[in-house]
Image 1 (tube, rainbow, N blue to C red):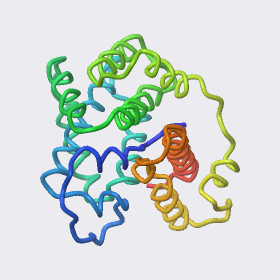
Image 2: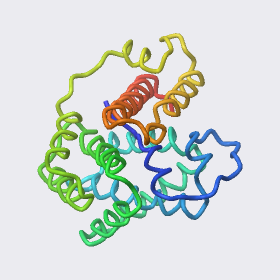
Image 3: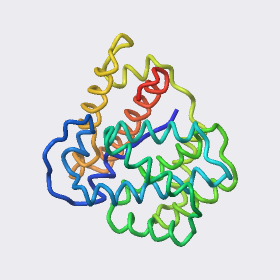
Length: 238
């Protein structure tokens, strides 16, 4: 199952922006609280460029990969931003993406995020690569390129890839348990449980804690996203 990050943590750390009013759309807690229209567009564009590059790395973008991206976007940015992001992704998929663009985006992300956040982004891209069940050599090469320009150590790259590519599947009961709900929960209750758990275990809340506590928070944050993604795929929640 795929982790989506995930990435609510990334959004806050990527740009330091003013708090805006909550939108009526069901966007995530972090998107509501920390984004501005300009920063949000820039952030999504950067992530979509890397996503498109990963989707095309093996020669063709697949529906399974697109499903992963859509689920992630809806969970973290809401319906309105998802529509915009998918258009950005479509534009990238319809043209060549050159290595210098990837390197430049990686450099930008590296300059605006901390090490732990870049590992989370790298983890997300691993999920995209694994979406069709097979990680091609070209996808592995691209992950190595991104990891290098993210400044992620070889050991951490390998550890992240192993966790995504070779981990054992968890049954749905455990995923529901991770979110603190049961299998009878409605789709709206599942979304709320995900937002609440993501807020509780957001790595930023542990920034002044010990290294072990920060590591545990990151692991739990990823586990929460894994659980939400798995449940969404099973229920076809969009």
